[in-house]
Structures are given as structure tokens and as C-alpha cells.
Image (tube, rainbow, N blue to C red; front, side, top):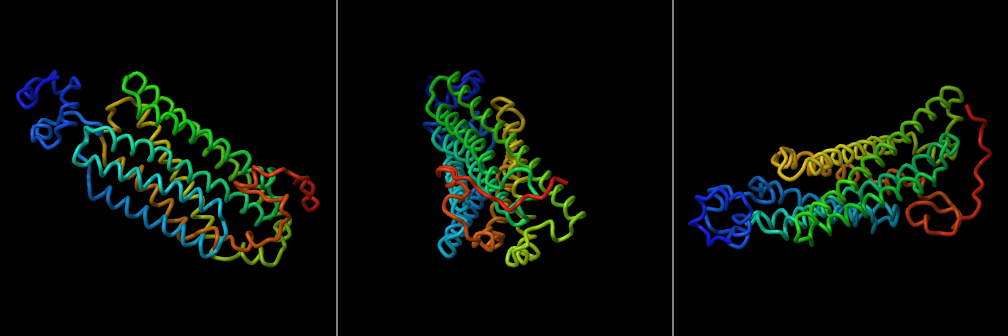
Length: 338
């Protein structure tokens, strides 16, 4: 490896990798910045934006914890969203670590792993909510049993999460560039699974909404669950705002995942990776919108009446219900398909 400043006039040294390694060990040398020695990020990190995002996600985490502690409802939702927000916090801490040394590996690896997997946890929380929404309208309005939404989409999201996590670990610990690229490829596969799962979820949601509307046109209010508490909740502003927040958050995470898929699949140094403004907006901004909407329109409050419904232990759904021994479930007599 070259000795340092005297080699900054040598483009082969600067762009061939030796310059980046040297600057990782000597980040305070002005020439590293003046000559724009290639770093992991391909741009100078905006410290203010990344600090702001870390603070916003920290406040969001406090919000999810406070809501769960005060209500003891929507436990699985609070757990998955909190895990996702924690990943976001660590991810932006990693970027802040890289502010003074964008050539060093630790901060970069922390941010790429944490920011990639964080939204997968959040998506799982959103998938759990559809089960509750189906219960609010009545099982007869869904061709899929309410509990089966969890059984279908959460495992798919788990596969996406595992692929992204494994790929991130391989990319982080690999010294061989080929092994590192294999890790990135695995992460790309995980993002692709996440995008496909989100599209499948939105499709199922749309079919549910269309069936609700079709039955309502034929049966009126009798098409929906008649429990007075549930009917009152269903007609409330809080429930309607929650549904808007839920689908908006889902679309934000899908949009973000499509962006990250294109960014990572395009290869090292592609034009998307050189646009910090797009990263802050599409990765940071969209996820901020998603989590803040769910902080303000939290299912523990907006779906309170559904959570308060009595149910036998054997008929629990949700994330934790996936691991309980299943018993035959008897629903109300279903109406003939319309």
C-alpha cells in the first residue's frame, strides 16, 4: 500500500482501492476529502438529516412503548414495530458514525444491515392488523379466515427478514469482495421477497374491500358485524383514520422497498447509490411517515373494541397465536357466497 499524501496525484492509487483503505485509517487527512477518494457512500453524509431521523425514530419508539405499557393491547404489533424502529435508530447511528470517516467499514455495515431489515419488522405488524379489520367487518366478508392472514403473510415476511439478515451478516464479515457481493445478492433476494409479499398483501386487502362493498350494496348494514360495540367502532372517525393510516403505511413501506431493491440490485456505485437526497427521502422519509401514522393512529386505541372481544384461548390469532396448538374454530353460520 502506498504511504499516503504523496500518492494523491496517482489516480490508480486513489481509485484502485488503496486510497480508500489508507483514508479509512487516516480520515483526518485533508487530501482524502479534497481528492474525493471513493468511500462506501459515494457522497458526503448529511449529518443534520441523519441525526434528525435518528431522533424521530427514538421518539417513535418511546411512543410505541408508552402505548403498550398503558394499554397492554396490540402486543405483537407493538413488538414488531418497536423492533423495526430500533433497527432504524441503529441504522442512522451507523451513518452518523460514518460522518467523519465514510471509508471505514463498521458504521457502513451497521447502517446497511439495520436499515435494510427494519421495515420488514414493520411490515409484519401491518400484516397483523388486517386480521383485526376483518373481524371488525365480519368474517363473512372475507374469503380468507381472519387468522389465516397472519399465517400467510407473516411467514413470508419472516423469510424476507432472514434473507436480508443473513445477507447483511455475510456482507459485513466478508473480506473477499466476491463473498461480500454474495451477501448483497442475498439481501436483494430478501428485498424481492418483501416486495412480493407486500404486493400480495395489498391484493388480498383490495379483494376484501371489494367483497365488503359488494355485500353492503346487497344487504346494507346486515352485511357487517352486528355487535353494538364493534358497529360503533366501525363507524367512528378513529377507525376510519386508522384504516387510512394502515394502508398509507403499507404503501410507504412497499415504495421504500422497491427503491432499496433497485438501489442494491444496480451494483456498487450505481447512480441511485450516489443520490443522498433520494436515500433520505425514499428510505428515511417514507418510513418516518409510516411509523408516525401508526404512532398517532395506533390499533390499541383505534381497534380497542376488537381487542376487547372475548375469545377462548384456543382461538387466539395474531403473531403469538401461530405457535399455539390449533383447535377447530366455529364461526357464525356463513352466508351463501354472493
